[in-house]
Length: 420
Image: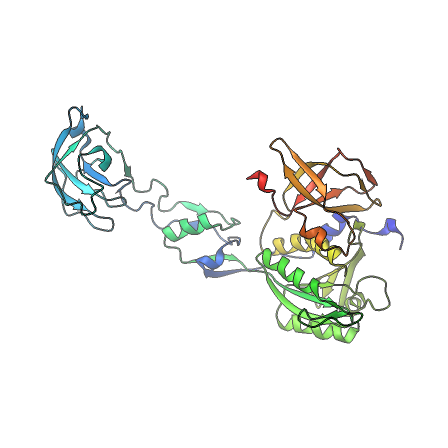
């Protein structure tokens, strides 16, 4: 297979996304919907606020009684009651009277405004705050001042959130205010992770000659968790078709929506994942013109979508970012599948081999633009190059040399602190 016959990154991504579908919906408790995609619109059953209430601690009164009031000529009103938040007023405000009121308390009948306590002669900093018989008000107000009106924010029957909206803490707060205790959202994708290779040890095992610990299985599980999906860790499979099948069967029994494995998809004598897929499902493609990450298998296993990532840890993580992330987000109902991007000025000379390349970098902002410097050695085994990075610089296919000072697109894994 010649290099020209490999898929471009975009061709491979298009094929992966075509092979996965948005998952069905489920009803969950409100907090379990955080970060997830609404499966149906939400219509308010109540108004917000549900009743007229005070936006300040102060006095509910008739605005006309304060015409001309000032510090030199305060208006004097008889205090006829006190309304706390949560109480139901049992008093009516008439001309020449006022009712003390707390923030959030219902406006009593007859009142059309509130004056803040700071604009009265009440010793409002006194902890006891006995109800005065009379109050002096040192400013005028207009009808409606400091009153939150019913439906001012939301009216009953109004569509609050559309299908496809992503629930953030602020949406959770609004829904809680409206008494929504359960919400219909797209199911979280259940994603199986499998690391293959006779050289692998569990992470709590002591190192032995020729062995390394299974970092990929944990990296991919963490990437899945970070997307709000559910990782199903299948552990390690040795370099035999039987071992791989046994692990994948456990994934089928766990009702996973996507398989992701690392290693076993190249051309080595012990790369058995591709062989298992060919026998138990299909292989859509297995080579991509990408650096790092050329060996990448995509297909199905017993009709479940399957992504076989490279074994080198950086290659596996970058390939996950480019392909698995978009697939999982699509399955979870998202429409924005890619990381945010910015244009950066590179501070280091970059050499590539002509494949579309993803270079680990640190992006910073000086207030007028973004700069990027490489994190050091770009070898596909140098995991600390990703630890130091907050972005991946994309060198387009066919470009072999990028001089310092040129501009590239950066995929932002994290935003630089200078942005905030």
